[in-house]
Image (cartoon, rainbow, N blue to C red):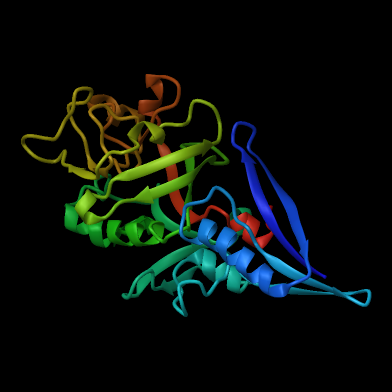
Length: 316
């Protein structure tokens, strides 16, 4: 007899619980298995978006022994070919890897990236960083070309680039999760926020933001408010600074709305009194009330990895 088994991932978002069910079917004919597998699993899991991963295996039972054959593995680290496309892939290929500097090829051109191989199982590609060591508070007030290609500033601050962000988040059947770490001035530990769905559109779509499935402390879900917005540039260091209905000065590149609840690319002020000129001018993350517009952050970091990374690696 042959036994076809796969694992089905089910999630209860409200309680942040993930479970895995082992599903099996028995038949005499191996050819029947292959047909069944490719029709129901391959078609449903590869060519369509899915909320779970199925990892099918065939187990042969003969004379009291069992042999297991992996027919299709959606966590295959060589799925995009032989290219290295992300820090998640690097970590899955080599779980012992701790190196942070890597060259990846999300499409055809090489991209130099920083990986976080330690936090929560590792495999994170760092896409943005702000630090208290930035000398100028307006380092992120740049034009669209810089935001498209990416840039670094003093103090290890960085922006990976919109084109690379689109490439990293748009692979078919490879949903990305976004982790944000906010460390307020004087805090010992950062506040950690997680969005299980993060996608940046193409240049033709003006790098539209898709963000969903928040997991984290209550009242911190600021970025969901910006879902569906286009990426735009705001300048504050001009005779006629950019503004909106709620603020008379804005800065940086972000998925701005008429009134903003988040902007992690704002000016990096060191003192709260510098924010009195405009509540959205600095690094912004709305938390419960408007007082949070005046918070100062020692560090901010945004990083992404495959949303099913934990399932594929067994980390959790």
